[in-house]
Length: 288
Image 1: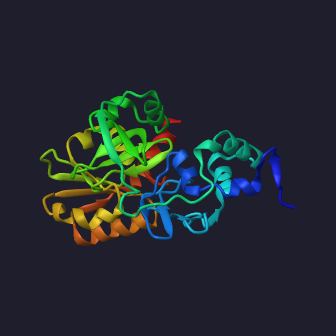
Image 2: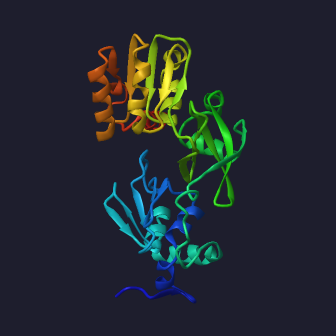
Image 3: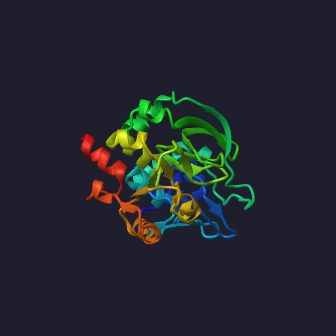
């Protein structure tokens, strides 16, 4: 029999009616894109670069296509926080004034817009601790990344930011994965004939630690999304050596194979982190 009530005045039924978009926003997750009937997020339950976490705005239900599981708002709190149902109800009751019991009106044109407010050196202890958890010292990140203050839906947040070549920012903190417009790849030029290509900012920062001299002597492209694989091809003919450090997954396999087929001077460097999904995962395990 399903539990009807764990906390006086706050039932499971009431918890399930809480707007999932509001729950995600409270936890620092915002939609990557919004359609008429659904909103798409980078999964709050796992790492990914392409949004595959769907929230039905009509049904107020979520589904993570990468995990093949979904549910209601209560289920989501249990999954994200690793709570029991009782703990999830307590969390929701403590934060109930932050949540809405009906679906918000999301405007397709502006709802996902992030506005950058302030850019400075990395100082906030929460961000320093987040990088330490990823085994990235601040002194390694400082030359390339900034502390970025930004607003979304009337609230202000902060994150580690990596600027792309069009002036947009990739933004990361312990609870948020997103980007400001325009989204694109990051291109670091040192007039080298060797080009290193990584998938994300933490892969790049990890590579600095794992192969410092190589990074210092090379140009670098951080894709920020595999969707930009085609966009960077016009640059690749300028290099004598192209070294690929994309993730060890099906999407990384596909993008790597595509570049190797077109450029005979390209090499797949993923043997350098064999048995790991990406460079940062290797770094984190090595540091243990």
